Length: 82
Image 1 (cartoon, one colour):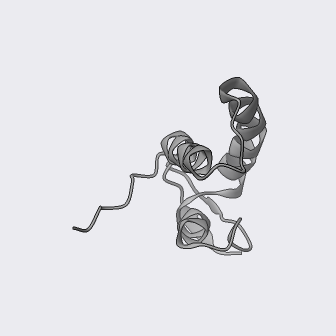
Image 2 (spheres, helix red, strand yellow):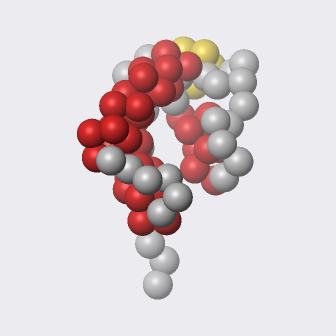
């Protein structure tokens, strides 16, 4: 595993061995988030899904979860291209 400078905690720490999901966002998480902060998000994700009653079958709910994930991990939203 590579050492990353974590966007959330600011530490240089071991990153994830592979992207957590197959998408550009998954690759971004692998490159910018340490394993400890990702584990913290995995614990929080269950609480967020339950609190907001997120239905992962709905595209707008998945988008909401990605936005909350970005906020938790201190990852800026990608630039919108016109």
